[in-house]
Image 1: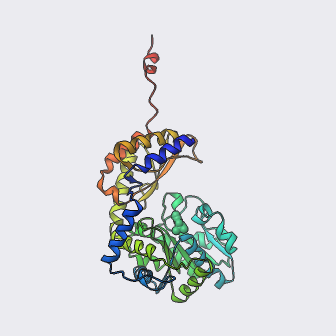
Image 2: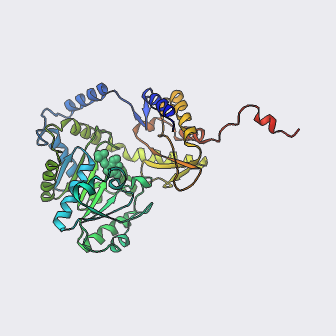
Image 3: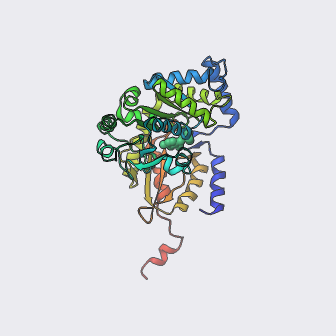
Length: 378
Ligand SMILES: Cc1ncc(COP(=O)(O)O)c(C=O)c1O
């Protein structure tokens, strides 16, 4: 993308009321909403270095929802997962962690977990594969931990079936290897299995969840585990500089997300499935098909820059940015793809109408005027 196109896209986005299926708010609007929510929720104390106040309330709520004895709040998922995996690896006397080659740590964290914690990573799965017991049993013994990403974001938010997940859990228990879930989008994944969150979390020894993706908070994460594990997580949080003097703003955002967004997850996932079906009906490719969560990938034979030009027009016309710009596919020459992450704001729109917008975005380039006439036989 040229600098000019990128600048025009950014500027259109700043004027667009709905970006990525979420209403854009100014900081003042967000802080005002958090202030109102603090009063509604009776939050009249601050935390001090993560103790007390809304942070303690959030930790108790998350531990109860996920059915584990304790939860520890972190300001980022990256830090939360380094702490969790480090705790398991120290206990096991092994730095080897098996995870998907598409996992967030390996794709988006500048190699931090390996450089900072000394982990040695091995592939649990490769590419667009869901993990199974066979994947776990095929690994060399002596692992520090196994990590499953639920859903696997880089594969279009792919999930294992319930039986596959139970199989992974059983295989880890048989081998005595701690199982950690990267549940950045576990709230969004729950409707797929239609099982209580606590039953899902019960399959793992530690589970990380995020507060700013589906839940729409400011930032932040938690890890749930047994109390002795949680104590070690707090030590690692402090060692990594993550026990901030005040973490209340993030905790309030998370509590609001649990109150307002969590109950809508199944409806949002249902809307995403309806959109995906309408897209397939119009010839676009959807992965996974049907989607497992409210986030999925869409691919089409189209030039990415042409789509970006059309996204700028669409934002001006409809006031909605339904997806971010497409990228050229590394797998299929000529094809481009994007991620569609559906949030609450989508529920105000008809998925058929939105599918029509996508069809416009990926339509073949119109021939310049006059070409059709010159193509006529003389
Ligand atoms: C699957 C997954 N894991 C971990 C993270 C890290 O979360 P954070 O941005 O809070 O560090 C992300 C963030 O996008 C994610 O998508």
